[in-house]
Structures are given as C-alpha cells and as structure tokens.
Image (tube, rainbow over the protein chains, first blue to last red):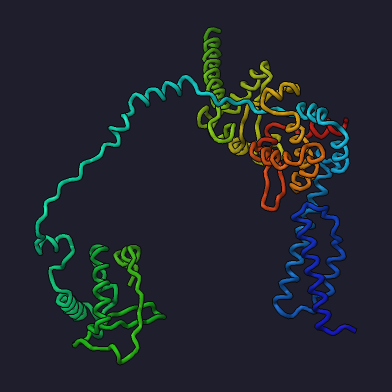
Length: 275
Length: 191
C-alpha cells in the first residue's frame, strides 16, 4: 500500500510527463492523436483528490490546459483532413522521393505563377532626379564653415546675473521669511483654526507660480516655519504656520512627504475640483 | 443616340486613365514587398477600384498575365467584402505556365526550384506547418548537404516560407500569391 506522500509524488511525475508529451506534440507538429485523451483525463481525475497545496493545483490546471491545446490540434487535424487540400504526407513524401527533380520542376511550374514586377527607373523619376540634382548646392557651399563669433569679455553686473537667474535679488532666508509672513496672512484671512488647505495656499494664477510656491512651502516645513497636517482618509492636506521658528532636527524623527504638483492638478484646482 | 455615345466614350476615357494608373502601381515596385494593398488602390483609383482591376485583368489575358489577389487569411475568400479587399494585397502574376527552360531566364536553377517545390509541398501536406529539420532531411535526399540550409534560407528571404522561433516552417505571402497549392498537390499525386 502506497503512502499518501508517495502517491502524490507519483501523481506529480505522471502529470509532468503528460505536460511534456502535450508540449512536444504542439512544438514538433507531431500527430495529436498520439495522446490518448481519455487516459489522460482518468489520470488527472485519479490524482485530483491528492492535491492540497497551490503548486499541485497549478500543475493539475496546466495539465488540463495542455490537454485542451492538444484537443484543439486534433480538431484542426480532422478539419484539414476533410478539406480538398488534404493529402497523406507519407504518400506525398513517397511520390517526391520516387520522381526525379526534372519531373518535380515540370509539375511545379504548372502550378507556379510568378509575380511580374519592374524595378527599373522611369523617365519621370529620372527627370525628377535631374531637377533635384540641378537645384542641389555643391558640398563646399552646403558645409561652409562658420567662423566663430567674436566674443567681448567684460565683468557681469549683479543685475545681469539676476536677470539670467543665476543670482536672486533677495537672500534666500529673507525670501523664505517673507513667504512665511505671507502664509500667516493667508491663514489669518482665508484659513480656519490657524491652518489653511495646502492647495488654497500654493495655488496661483499661473502654473509656474504654483510650482514656485510649492517649492518655497517645502522649505517652510523643512526649516520649522510651518507644519503639515495630513488627513489620509479625507485626502486633505493642511499647512499650519508656527508663530516662531521651531528647531525639530534631533528632537523627533523627520519624515519626507511627497506632494505632487502636476499641471493636471493645478488645472483641477483652477476648476475648483481639487481642494 | 448621340448623347448616349458621348456618355459611353466619356466612361471609356475615365476607365482608361484609371487602368493606366493601376498598371503603374501594380507593375512598379513601391515597397519592400511587391504588390499593392487594396486601400492604396482605393486611395489612388477611387472606391470602384475592384471594377478597374477586373477590366485590367481582362485586358491582361491577351498578354498571359493576371491580377492576383492575396488575402490576409491563408485561405482564399470567395466573396470578399470591401474591408477584406482593402486589407488584401494585389499583384500581377503570370496567368499561364512557364516552361522549365524559361525558369532559368528568371534566375532559378533547376535544383533550387525542385527544392522549393518539395519544401512547399511538404509544408502543405503537414497542414501548413512543418519542422525545418524534416524539410532539410527531404531536401538532403536530392541536394548536396551544404546547399540545403542555404536554400531554405533563400526561400525564406524571398517570402515563400517563413520560420518561427521553434524552427517550424510555414508558407509565406509569396507562396500564397504565386502557387496554386491545390493544383500542385493534385498534379504530384497523379504522377
């Protein structure tokens, strides 16, 4: 009497063998009737009560899937046999080996109607090509070397650097403090309970300005000028300014909160769909 | 009576110009593969292009040529819809037969052509799909070994056969356009 473990092992091996057999019929164009479908089904049925773990059930499912593919091939085989094109491959192979190549060619050319096509150039395309050639500038003219532009050297002024956005016209800390003040004013006028919705603060007339405000807000929070209040269930984010700058670093663990400020979100906010 | 005559001659001129355009499109190769897609003909000749092609086909009879339609599906379509025609590819092929001597003039050696015939026949007999090794084995019977692989690659390159990643050979677009598969099998079996 086989133990349950041994029986499962035998069952797995049998299913693996069936899968391999079905695969080789599919891949190597073997006769699909080599597979005895009834026998495979009875094997699958016999071992099905043994399967408990998902891996074994997957093996069982794969066997059924492979068997279904073979049944499909069998049906195609029957269909092909019923068409006028069906010929016994062995009979045909025997004919091909018996007759000489001259005779094969003679037969083939009777059924062969090769495509007629021209690849020659036409008078029209030749004329087009000549016109193109005439209007084409010589290489030395097309690939003329441009002399490098002479550059004047001089010292850049602070105003010029600000215009080119290399320097800012205010020191960053000064700008940040002004921005903090702006946040406090906003909370005072539009906010509730000392806080304001994130988008109500960063949202601006243009997308560029909105991104700039979101950027500055991130520094307000990082440097302890304000904090974020997040209500995940309601999907609401509030920003709350502190009265005095607080130094959080070292006191509690800091976390990063990514907030997407995409152009799409900005459009939604403009339409009043985003809060 | 006179009005009717003018109408008929106008109609003739209309189709004559369309036939010329169709001849240019069908005879001169426009893409990597020869032939013209149905939708291209519709764009150039108008929606009555199937009629233009029928007239052209009739005209080509005298020259032993024909307009051949190869549909996307392997099997020929008996009454194609406009959509099927749009997706089909049209060619001009020889209507009659070449003599074995003439095949040399179009660049085929007798060995290579016999190899092609064997490969196509074997794939047809195997329901349109046969392992490359089997075809190679068959060819090796009558062709020198070094030529077998080279020839099969050539048939693939020309578009008579195609091969998948499991080294199975199938019939490709050129066989569908050029070879009367049923006639080939019938003739071989009657030998």
